[in-house]
Image (cartoon, rainbow over all chains, first blue to last red; front, side, top):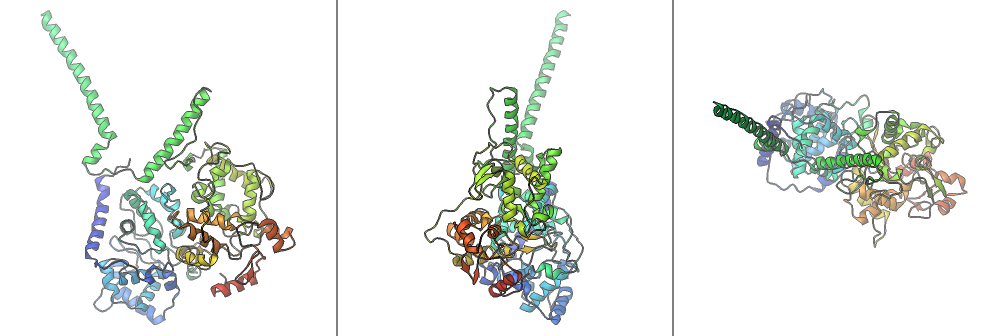
Length: 253
Length: 378
């Protein structure tokens, strides 16, 4: 039997409080997915769209300086997109994935008061361009384990899964280094544990339900709270996604 | 005086007895508190054991019980014979990876496991496609209803209708390389030669995994379950939508799988030159339907209906793939169909303008992909 001391629980309680607060702030609009959102290939379509150089420059401006009265991406996600304990890493995540999340905040399929607010300012091309801007951005990890999770258990879940409860390895979809696969499976390596844990909890509770084929729902349902802390902490120990010289050729594959 | 002394001695003895009794009582209370996590409950840090912990505890106990019963049987032949270890679901429980012995045999088991997981890396010269053993035998070959290797290990030698002879485990694995791993297109050009270390190590791994299972026991969870046949039968055209809804996000619309940034296949190719050939068991619609329903999508076992499983299996198996290696022993694709494909498959049929079973060339494959998926071969 696992016993968790109160100290180790504190970050989880904070994380859950944040989730609760976000829940209260979020609009009561139904999470019914539009046909675009529930298409399992949505991220793939978005990831293959091209944008002009002007749009990319515009995206950089939005990322760094914000737009009109709305704050910049960097003000929460950090100048290099590496995130922190209150906002996730977005640097190096697949462009199609990022753009799809922006769409989902817009159409209510994904909930977060801050993100729902900022996407109101963005048009379609800017969402595409922001995906490409952050997808190409490489930045060192700013994450470290801080939930008191069992790192060995986390490594086991990430590398081998736990088939006794029908949990496949994280890496069997998110890539052998957790750097993501194609457009639909984002990088999870070097993600901040608070973010990973809250998202897994949200999938488990059904609050977040925008993963293709609802793949994350089944996985999260089978994870205990201790497992969620374990895997979130383990992923934070990994190096962030690096594209090498030829990222698009490989990433698009 | 005497009386006084006696009284004093008596009270000292009584105190000692009370003291000892008190210590015992405290000890018992302490043990109980610890045993039932009372302290944790009082401090609100108690957590119920998770399903995974319960499963893993049951598995550990089953293996431990086997070890004890073996010891008793070894010491006395009249003791109860050891029972096969089973978990909470009733399926056989293979030994834990951590229990691979630390000796020469264990080294072979570990090498076998590495070949099984990363076949293209650790037995690369005999692999002619993008697959690995563990793509179809999930959880490193341990998962029930995913053709677990513990069940295979207690099933050979056996006579196989496929090649009409007695097959040892080596012969069986030779078949896997020949067909599922498409060894004809590998660097070596065929499956590993007889007696090769690759066989020894894989066989060690399987043997170790089946330790505790009775020979020829047809254990529950072996192979893939075949879904019951449906009234509508199977139809590859109906399967296209099932594929788009459930499979394409991982295996891609063109079925060619996806690699990660390291250039490794994360989702294996399901048809075409980098997949298994027409001789592999998986090309049969019934086998594929069973595998798919019991194991796909990953993490959503048994989520497809019987009809969906049959149709999507038919869809995947209606595409071109590397030729059946036995084609070279026959006059034509049709003769190969007559001799080797009298079962539920599409070998020899013309679908999407291509006769299935004809050897694929770079040009014919490129044309096929362009016509059907409107893209260049990747």
